[in-house]
Length: 192
Length: 197
Image (cartoon, rainbow over all chains, first blue to last red; front, side, top):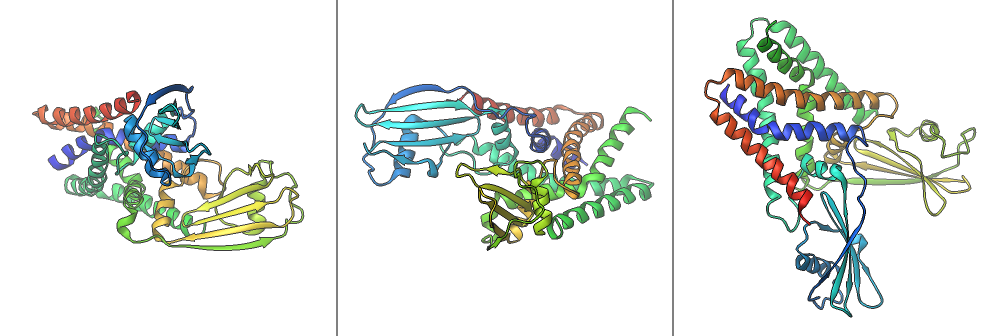
């Protein structure tokens, strides 16, 4: 009983996030997902000489700017001048980054990415975000809650079976709903 | 019925009704985030060309076009919106777990390219996890209802679970510590993502 109660408390905040994010997937538009207005800023950086390795150069610039996120490889665009333009995305923000070797500066166009992108990350992330150690904690929390929820499902059924006197109705609900759910999943996979 | 019994019953019934669905989401979620541990995902691609079906609307932008095209060609799956691409062609995809079929129609609505992708079991499970939204035919709307119910049941589990803990425990301090730690992690993660440059 104590495991069930305290396990549930550990999962509480994740279950709230999971419930709200799942509802938002099913109802696009409930949670704002539009990009915000662009803000522009510049920063001086020592650009490494990586003339043929666009991805490595982009990641080096990301580290210099102390930004977290994923460099999108398909956005890497090397200009005839040797400058590089690329996009960097992370939950909550997106950046378009352009180098200017002649001035030794980097221009950044930054936009907020709406609450939906943060919620998507919270919904299911086990790998964190490149450049941030802190966000690995959420990944760890997600892992723990995933296992705990499965344990709680089993312990909930066991607790109920031990304590109840009238098992008939609940068993019927459990049996019918489980068979119906599994039939729907099978239909999706094999008939669709 | 007193409040405690009502909360217990809500916790129990919502759990039992949606147990299989909720377990499915957490199992398939594990496959989604740990795909690499479970072996390489397989994929088979089959391409074919089909003539534009006779009797079908010549306006791919129509709301019912994707559904009619799928039925005519015998393609299974939930149709996407028809996408009008920059090169003038139209594209519509049909998805069900483990299968993705994309139909590309030229601008003159001549012969169409049909590309069917069949995935291995990992992608079937991931497909179940990712299937969402209203607007498909038949079982897809039933699925969307089940997803809504499973999502709402998560919120109900969480809230009724805390209420049950509060009523059943004599010493609340350990529970408050666990809840506060979870809140701190959640709030600091959201704040970090919102405020960090």
